[in-house]
Image 1 (spheres, rainbow, N blue to C red):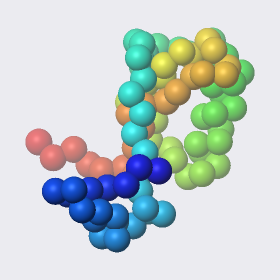
Image 2: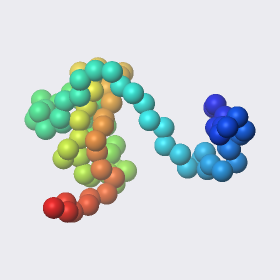
Image 3: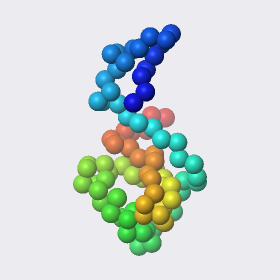
Length: 88
């Protein structure tokens, strides 16, 4: 892990690295999960969706997936871990 610095001095003691998220840039085109009817989804995508549900992540209505046909590299984005009502 790289050090976190400010004006050349380490500030890593101010961060809780065990509670951080990592973001990854994914090059490619994401497709909405809804474009894949349940009966047409690859098995690896269905297994991943089942794992989401088992982890109590149920808000996948707006989820997108990169590389849906590649069982070794597919990635989900834009899924909620909690349901929040829209505030319009």
